[in-house]
Length: 74
Picture 1: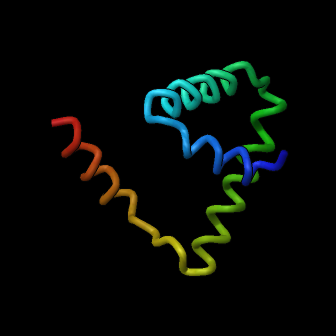
Picture 2: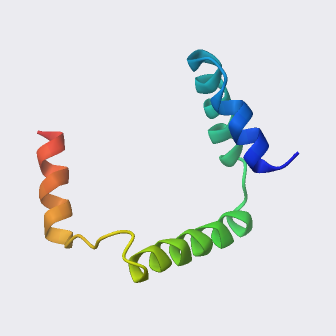
C-alpha cells in the first residue's frame, strides 16, 4: 500500500478517528533519534527553499513574524 492510498483512506475516516490517528502518528515521531530527525529537517528545508524559488511561498520579514506572534499571545 502506498502513502497516497493510506492518505486517501485516512481522510475518509470520521473526524474522531482521524484525530486519534493523527495523535498516534505525531506521538510516533517523538520516538525518533537525533540521527533520524536530522535528515528530515534537511529534507524539509530543501522543500521550503524549492517552494520559495518557484514562487509558491512568500518570504516574511522576521520583524513582521515577531509582530504577528506578539499579537497572538496578547
